[in-house]
Length: 263
Image 1 (spheres, one colour):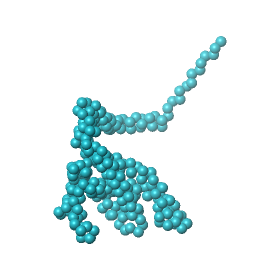
Image 2: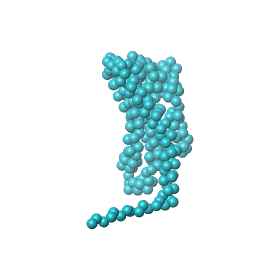
Image 3: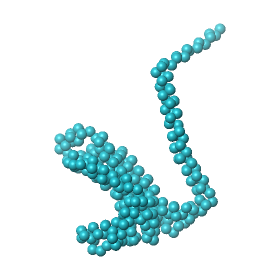
Image 4: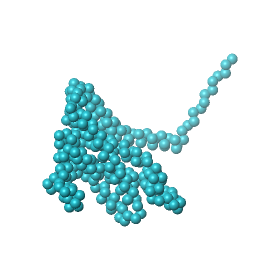
């Protein structure tokens, strides 16, 4: 003879649990429209790009891109552009952050605000200003270097194929270094002062503190910043297009410029 199964009574929800569930539903309901909009703005362009890429015109554009006689040169230009702009932004941004974090610097807030100006300026405006500055006739760069005795004659920064890519990379560094400074400055505030004071009491010099305490502490921020810089460098278009259009003779053409021309 089998015994009848017993039913486990369901515990009624408490007022606190009902309130939490109601709050979760309210939060999801409020966030749902924004989530749907962001999903639409993300998914629809991706689908449209893939649809265009696999179409006949898209495949023909890819063939033109790969078969371009300048394709290998463009890949080399892209590598040089990425390395110079990313390394320059990381070095300058870290140096500026360490300087802003120094206790010996007065008016750090003012200097930090001035250093952030390039990050605020639109790329088109900044690229146009630097195009004027690099002018061989009236540019401030040649004028300053000639007055300092560094140059004996003006240089065509945007017309010389051997220097144009490096000159434009300096502009990219000028635009992106403030972001690195902001990220690293935020990471420096998370380092306890007690750790730095203990290292100095033990006799560690400035370079030892930088190498063994500061740089390891901000390593995650440095890695994330470097990744973002690489992505931005590989997607750069405005600076080069406004300043040179990829010239002269394709010496400043990088992959985004070539893709734009191909498609």
